[in-house]
Image (cartoon, rainbow, N blue to C red; front, side, top):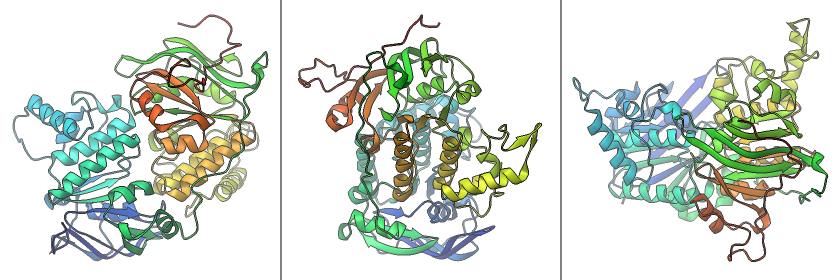
Length: 537
């Protein structure tokens, strides 16, 4: 139960950046022994407020108390000494180092001799205890985004934080794993810890949180007991309007594949590829995506989804098999070649792969179009045309930025994703490879992204949507394919998709068309008619 003295008190916190007031006299009170959800739209100031508490930002004004004592937190090291640990949405890991080295980085003990086997054993015990298994000897650059997030969580647990801030911790987890994490958090608060849980998944707030604080435009607008509110009310408090939780869409009619392969935009045939560790990541993957179709790919992080997207988009070589774009073999072709053929790519890591953090919003928006005659002439960029082009996209895609010349890393996560979608859709691609396009986005921004994908589908685009959010996949996909250890375990139309059966496939149980649990044959077999020729080695 909560103690009399709050674990954290933040009063009147103000934090400004050039052109932006991120926190406007924001307040937050978190008790020991409770899970406290912090909600708000992207750009509402949630991460900024937590970065102040974690010592990454100094507030312009306001006061912080930790366990009743006034705390001047000037650095993450001081935050650690106050027992505060934060798992950030954009990870704070050193990629060339191992998991174990990242976990102990910055600790003042041991001072002289590192017993790495002992440290690795401690990490394994923590990861097993909390159900977030990672290899302590693996290099961070070899890990998927989901695995990297697990490292961040383990790092804070290893340091013994009793005030734990989790910024979107379940964004890369399956529903079952998210539930397990919720149980873990409950265990932590029973021990007297305080957990601040930043999330955009309202179902999780209702399931896990004891209390909720809502921020809007940098101000605290509500402080609610979870049991006394509803998901609809929380969404309204977040965005200031009614939110549609289920987007409308037209029905998908699968084209007659009897000789009409022109409808097929993408096909992969017996595709194989290696991971960064040199181990098999894709094993004979085959499927097709047609015009006016969204094919969703489900699976737990680290089961080949990242490698699949990278092979298709030319970022990773295939060791065997083929990738066909409009029946043209583009296996192991360069990214520039597949872009020229009309492929758009929304990568899972928007900051390191999708966008260039230190470039302006304008420069990021023209990265794929600056060669066009509309924007350049004789090798020179036409600045006025570029300004008009970027301003149009900023307006059309509702990108909240002080100006087109703002460095893009200063934008919130939702606006980063809007900028990325604006560029990829504007470049004219009629095949979109979208990897976790709504990861870390609030309910309003998620609705916006899903509508944009459905709009492109309606216009005739084919979309390959890779996500670990089953609710999202079932909301927008026409068919759902499930991956496990680099294999396709089954493909099912969304209307006949059952979460339990998808969960079984995600855990490694293949569902065949003749499976007794599926007497009506709802699990479609991948049609690869028209894929002619030899597989490449």
